[in-house]
Image (cartoon, rainbow, N blue to C red; front, side, top):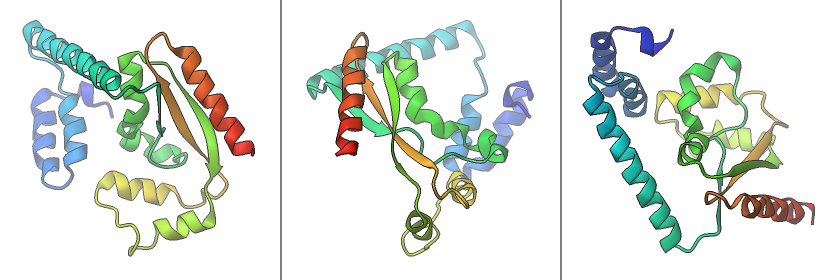
Length: 173
């Protein structure tokens, strides 16, 4: 089911009801409502451009060449839960929307110890529906790749590639 095809009143009701149990899921539903007017749309565009500028300023103030960050909060997920956890792709979507060059490099594989720790409630307790779905999907994921994402500033693609190469070299040693 596509949220964009549902009546706006139903989406608003779903957002309100879900907020009681899952704030993250509620915010995703709320974001799918669309805009009521062109004025509202351009207001959001203006906020986005302000955020873009603020993000760049913070990056420059911190004197960063590149950032190494997660790609996704888990290893690959099963097909049946993709629609419910797609928002977890925010790690990639954020830099994509900023138009920053990024690349992904595998750094390790899921081990049985990783799974044992994930299912040990003393170590990890899922707090949201998304956490529970990701945990459920991780069963049988031993051996799947886990990667990191390398990101650089716009027009600094070579810097991004260099960081990826350095990570790859470091992992071989």
